[in-house]
Length: 461
Ligand SMILES: Cc1ncc(COP(=O)(O)O)c(C=O)c1O
Image (cartoon, rainbow, N blue to C red; front, top):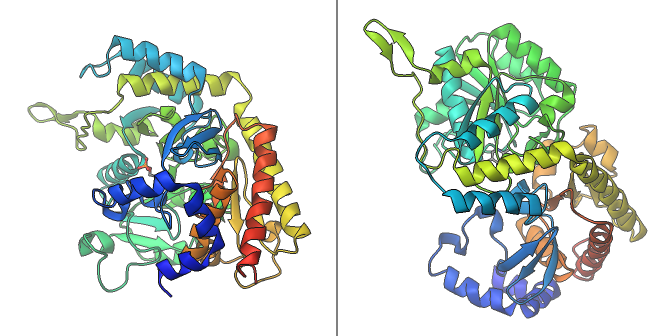
């Protein structure tokens, strides 16, 4: 059955099409300009994406004037919600002073010192613009420091889209993925998530591994949960073998705690990548880490005086003043309020109440997660699993990752949108510190509305 037939037969898609006519019209134009009709793969939505025209706090409004409780949260960047007054004021002030000096400036220093004071591994800080750039730089720095070529990452963990991390959810197979050199594929070892025995075996007879990179909360901020006991074990294992440990805290940084996952779990990596919250909703990111490792970006002593750093790093928008102002305002607000704790409490409440709805409707879906996230497991094989089973690692990682078919993902998102809530595609959501009781209530009702819609279409059988 092709997509059009599925759409025609689905009441969910029909309702969505009726509710969002202006988005449909704009999407027709977008398809003539953008490959895929969108500007980020995660924004793909059948039958058409929703076009948003404004946002405030925990809500956003589409071009047809419909209001949504927002769990996309600027892809996780908006811990303080949209247009937080403190961030807005800082940005307004900075814009009036200039947006790009092409020079060193005090705000970048203040921003970096704040990060240094909050993130345990941040002895040195180097700003980039995106999380992808930060992980790219982390891997290059690790290779330069160690003089070793190989990198280890974990299947299902996400680190952006540069060549070293963009291929194969598992190993790459005999052919390199489109556009990526076989040499790069050959130098990246992909390990089952959280499997130290596998990793140990993989590295038993080799001494060519520069670094291990992972999402310390498990893939996609805990969609595939990771046993927290794995982190200290991995820390000891990497230290023993002289392999650098990189935490990708692009999402977990300033979300799990002020010190990120490393602060929360008390495990300090050698290098850390930060993005999203660190830039306060503006484009900004950073690689931070041990001074001894980061010194590969310092000038070196050569025979004829100082020589250039082994790793030379550029970037027109690195530490852009407007982003620095938003980043400082955000981090200071997180420091001086209980926003992180509130977001975590909202997460726990949403997961609990959404599970109660599923149970009441006789649906065996599970809503699980930790901190300020919820992940929805659509239990395609109707296994007798509970959220606790998933959190304890008793459900296979690939099953968790791929539980929702592409069609179900589109239906779930479109159905949520029909019920006034915008969720992330997997499906799930990232909660801010400004989601209110009413937002949470509306979300639980929207979940009930969605499940009833899906049931009518036979999707829960
Ligand atoms: C864990 C993780 N690492 C890296 C990235 C890439 O960050 P960016 O989208 O800023 O390039 C993301 C993006 O979602 C991410 O979730």
